[in-house]
Length: 74
Image 1 (cartoon, rainbow, N blue to C red):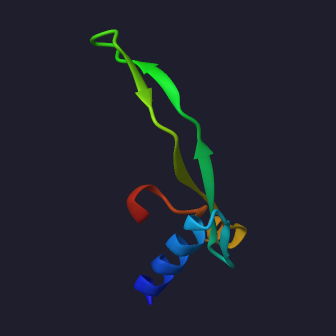
Image 2 (image 1 turned 90 degrees about the horizontal axis):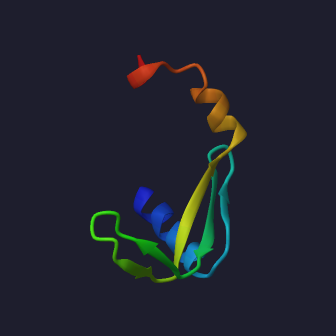
Image 3 (image 1 turned 180 degrees about the vertical axis):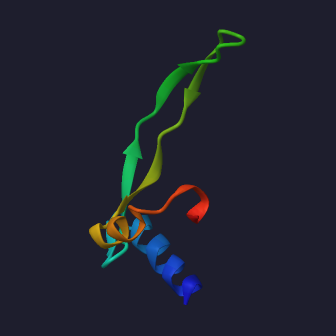
């Protein structure tokens, strides 16, 4: 079941679409543009290529179920 769910999420993200799982949350692809960064140790400028990242937003039901948890689920 988990393998099927993860495959469905990956497949949907690859299409550039958001997938929502009711009571859990949503996964949304976000495009990160190419940018230049500076290595603080060497001061060398490095180009970071463009990529797609995934953002997870917890749903209301999930938030409600975990809001009263303490550290390490105690």
